[in-house]
Image 1 (cartoon, rainbow, N blue to C red):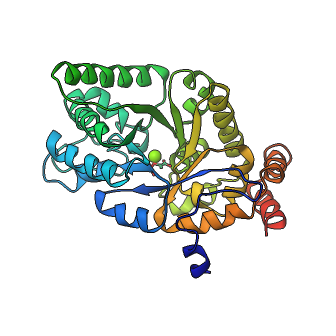
Image 2: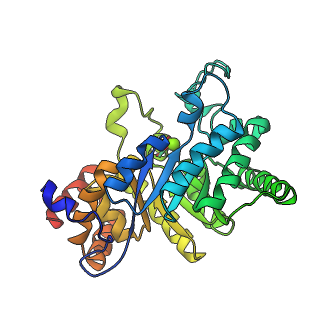
Length: 322
Ligand code: PEP
Ligand code: MG
């Protein structure tokens, strides 16, 4: 099977009926680039920049960050790279940035909430990103967006920094600006967000945790991690349809994007981009080659409207996708 997958390394990702999907990889550091290229990913759909902060003894400088982002963007040779701004907080901590003790860290001071509060840190990161945008195809993404105001504020800060750099004669390339959909409030309002963002990337790890009110790291409630639960699928469907209505694209970068039960449903729902660990890319490309989008659309419609449980949908996919 591995040999069969290897043959797909340089092929485009198309379904049996000829529809193309973008298969991307998630990375944590520029070192992961080799795996991305070796596995024939068409893009990077999530660069988790918090590792740059976690692997450092102090706040990384603008130049340190610029070098890391440039290496990834340039290394992808014109293929798109989604860079997510710092997602610290929750379970991720920095020794040099003490965060308040919290009863519920996953519901607390985290990600964009820190960035909007500590604009010194945020602006440094954005300047590094803007400078790196000159070296390829950059997509900037904000994590943990709950409200339109947060997105507008983050984007305004980004555009301010761009203006300053351009005024100083620094070269800035073109870039897209999107958000993670990982908080149910943003998923529900996707139709509004879609008018203002360039793209969505659905983060199922957190979206499921927050929708089910079940800590993603707590084994006692892990049975509630239910990607195929119709409630989750309905949110995903709404996000994709909302993006398409405004001519935008929707991707997914949570674990579910590379899951063989979820992929047929996502193809049926019309998800545009799938971002997963690099080692899953060829397996998913091989699976997609066997799928017919019209059949998957019917399957997904059933999963969303007729099924009552997560398990119903596992069975539905297993019975219909060989
Ligand atoms: C997610 O929440 O699905 C996601 C991709 O982000 P992270 O796993 O880094 O929280
Ligand atoms: Mg997340």
